[in-house]
Length: 453
Image (tube, rainbow, N blue to C red; front, side, top):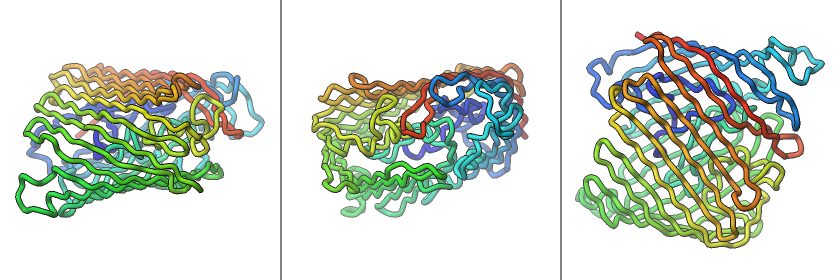
């Protein structure tokens, strides 16, 4: 998935995931007719949907019990071809059984789960999708949940998920502007709070030096910046600021295969004595029309207060505990200087047609010579006929030291043209006042119906 694939859409059902405890929907599955030229692309389409079912979620305190909720998600969507889409929905969890009864009326069974709506950021979850402009336009905007979002090559913001914390439900946004030899990407993890903001400027050296097409998109200079203010409502975590300079050069650039050499250096610029890290490696991309494969292989020198992929898959948990459940937060983590290795592989199979199998999978592994390994695996699958879809993600950080596992999975099956069933489950981690994390498990299942015209 590239940086432009900012919104992770839930298969041909085009649903936002009912499983609000984490990011079960982790890879993009094709929308109906997404690969075909639609003669009615200039016409508006409308869709209404409703999902409901029981949901089990931990109380959120260490050693707490399981609360039972009635889950409901009404959704309304309006779209016009590939240039505009707006989807709104209100994920609602009504407490039926409270494992730890509270004294206040707002926590009594039958009321909405208070933690879902107790900050301004939580109201961002009403925005399930906003798309303005096509990917090939000069400018386009994407907004909604972030799942496996990568800024550029990912050396600062890498496979980031802003839905990982079960009590925090922001909407993010990405603006991309292409003008002449420059491409500018600006991203916000939370459009309603002072949280993570990042940007990248990519300059095409070939377009500056020549007017011949054969020199275009072969050499790039890149500058990236990311800053997390760390503020959500009354909650405040330590801010982090990082910057990077790098570039790439094409070693081979054919119609179906591209191979680039990449390299650069980055640092935590907010630290009193910033540590500098460097990387060098290769990136590859191949596309036959039915098989899309890309990958990176890098050697990295890093440590101290800086590491590449600082804002990574588990960042929403790492900002409380870098690894494990009660370790120092990422902003205070100091690693020994090390030579590390990073490898990433992404694979897409299928054209996206309803009658065909479609699969999207990715794997990323980083190993530090200090003995630590971090991994992230994702999978999205659509069976022929587009009636069965599945998605899963497994994030493991701190293998060899203090490991922490985040696992989420979801399955959907369409029964009739307007009726489907769903089931989801996985782990959840609740931040505590002392900065530690309380681990628990969640599961839900139910039915849904949708109508489109």
